[in-house]
Structures are given as C-alpha cells and as structure tokens.
Image (tube, rainbow, N blue to C red; front, side, top):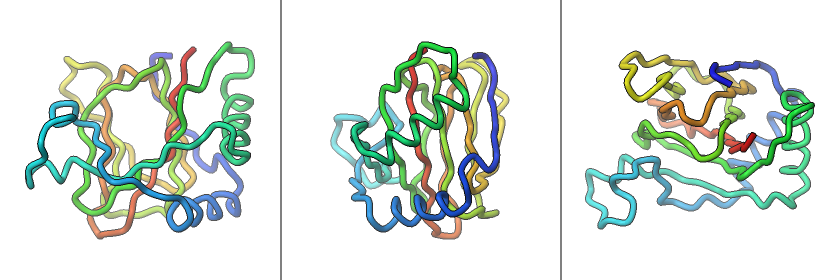
Length: 173
C-alpha cells in the first residue's frame, strides 16, 4: 500500500453515535500519551504539555473491538494475511495537537466517531520524510482513513474546545 484511502460512512449512523458516546463518556482516558518521541521519558515542562493527550488501549478480546476488527478486515483485507497489532483511541482537547510521527506495523487505519466540526481537527500526512508538502484531510464523522504506517502524520485538535477522538488500528501485513 502506497496511498491514502478514505471511506466515508464506514459504520451505520446509530453505531457511530453509540461508539462516540461510549468512547467519550464510558471509556477511561489516561493522560500522558504523545506522538513526540523527543519528549518521551524526560521531565515534562509546561511547553511540553501541548504535546500530550488522552489515550485508551483496547483489549482485543472485547466484543466490540472484535466486531470492529472483523468488519475492518472483511471490508478491506479479505484475502490478505494480516495481524492487528493494537487498537486504541486518542482523545485530544483544545491545544493538544499530535506531532508528525510514523507508526509501527505496515498499515494504519483511523476512524473518526465525533460529529463533523469545521474548527480544525485535521488529519495531516506527508508521503515521506523528505516531502515538505503536507496534505490536510478534514475531520468528518464516520470517516475511515487507511494509509502506510511509514507516512509521517499527525492529528490536530479542534480549536473550539470540542474533544476530538480517533480510533486507531495498527496492522501488520
């Protein structure tokens, strides 16, 4: 895979809304996750706080996680030998932006459960570490984005204070 695939309306609307509410209000969020390797393991300064956000790592034996993995695999990886390495959500509040990074595995899939918001929240990527051109994809509710894990990418928080949630699947092909 050398391209970005975007699929809108991946899940039925009622399931999308259920998951949005579940992730936001029923799922514990642990603060302190970052995509900035330069500040991992060092003492945090007030300037570093903008690089941290909330995360929840899902147990792959969870029924809902199993269903979402099954759906993703059956929709996009029917004849491939793949392994899902991890499934988790990132939750960002105003000012909690990600930093450009690459992922483990070979393919990353993101799904956006929050209502569409025109106040930022972009997913940004570069096709490689040398390419200076950044591609911005708007955050749209129920949008699925699939891309090579080696593409440098980041998620930006909404600027109006609304929480931004992304569900991430890390895949090894």
